[in-house]
Image (tube, rainbow, N blue to C red; front, top):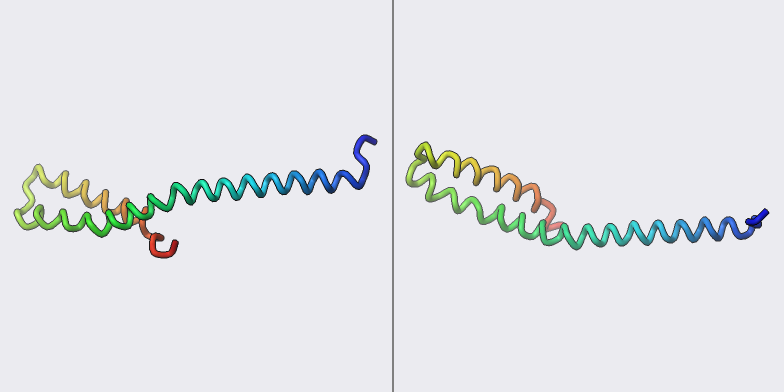
Length: 88
């Protein structure tokens, strides 16, 4: 046989180490991307409601309903992105 019984576990261990290293680097890459998105999402969710005030104070006309709806959707997206910000 080309592979003796003592080298097979070493090869398997080497493969497992490579897989774990790749998984860790993927997690690190994900965290490097996710952390700024959480930050921006959190603070956008805090700041966006202040944009509702002038729209609601002046009364919503038919053309402003679209803007108000877009602001609500953007605020919902910011809440989803930034909901874990304080935990990280």
